[in-house]
Length: 421
Image (cartoon, rainbow, N blue to C red; front, top):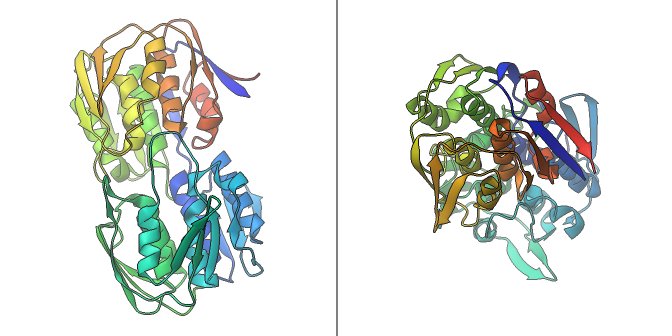
């Protein structure tokens, strides 16, 4: 099992390229099940989660090849499998994205109940509600979900959950509705850029989709979909993470091949903290200012502040002047990084859904344990400003969502090593 050893860093400086969006890529890959024709994806990140989704699809008979770095070709013309087994699904929650496409095209699906990061309850009731309202029959047995449908029919479906819109449910029901008879209207739909990216590719495949990027998406079902070539959008969470890395180290970093409009809530907050940000069409220049004031933030569905950036801002808050209050409104247990940040010497505690951080606090090196993907990123950020040499264990979480993170950080001046234990 690998770990990172990170030395306290000086100001990060240089240029870093953002990889393709993991959360978008996984849905796009699952969409290959909707057609017999080849699908080509570009800007595909080389990540553990992408490799896991590859295994899920190959297990169903999808032919997948990577002709060159960043390019993935998928061919479902001979795919006959209907089952996503527990051994694969337990490693990555997004494996259940195959539910919608399989039901729509094959009329059957068998998918293990999902796994993923330990950040609280993430029920898939909205996914099943949406498929049920399209006409699918759903049952569960032995830890598996069984979905059956002779033919799906359009419906008006509200996907609003307890924490707002559901990205996963929107992905699944949107894909299923493309092949349903009639018109489907998704109310309370997620508006995240990853949904827009999926909708653009589905339209290139021949789907009739309108309203993606708003809370109401209308889909007119078609008889079949064709192949397409599509480029995955840049990863907005990786973009935000590098922006925080520049800010926490007092750095000067050019973040290339990104979408500045996708991280507006993150850059707005950084600018309020005195960080200077210059935006171009595909580039962000992030220049740290002087002392940062304390801040408050609340996570919310897009375009609100992303829950996937909450942990990184907890690390940043340790270097801000005063008491920062960070409220997590999406996942009730997304606070496991708090105890590990405290091992660095952070003055940080949890109070209900709020994380209270007092700063600025000099951090010192420590061995720490990552609990999930974004918590891992927060620990790396803290290690950049902690005196001495820190060890980040269980970095397999990081490998799920950050492509070659240690290489990119090293190019910005970080002394970082990956060590196998």
